[in-house]
Length: 219
Image (cartoon, rainbow, N blue to C red):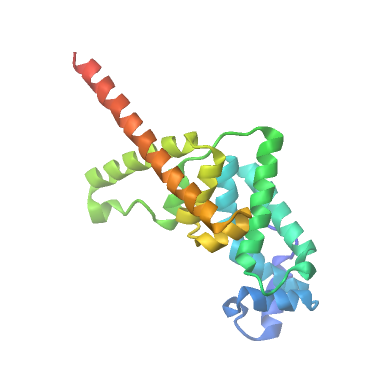
């Protein structure tokens, strides 16, 4: 996916080190990169590309655009690595870069399309289990619920979508979300609570509409 560090150079670097660098902390890797071992930035790419791609894809709704944004995120992170403060949490720092890239992209394109919620959460096996565990009927019902969530979340303002995505998909803490969005923790809590209430109202509205259509079909 990324071209900053070639896979061959990354593999050679791992062999040269003679240890499992995948077990290193983010800040250990950053320190090495800051010290000149730039090939190790490839480990950071491997570690974050899946999570950041899902986050960007969920926000912009287009695979190619998400790939381009992801490339930009890693390029900017690489270029600014020396200015990164190792006292900060690296994941919050790089998510902030991704957040800025996505928001700026949405502003430029006035883009308001979003991919299926199911496509995202299924990658983490959330909101669903296999049909062999629950049976085809329960799996179908769960898929219907996911579809309903998809419809509802697509109607939420972006300020609510992004906090729900960070909190319940990326599993970020209030403190991390605060740093990523650069908002006070109390504001983050307020946004999450408002988003959940708004979702509940939208779900209720959907179900009332569905029940009304069902009654009409029966008449």
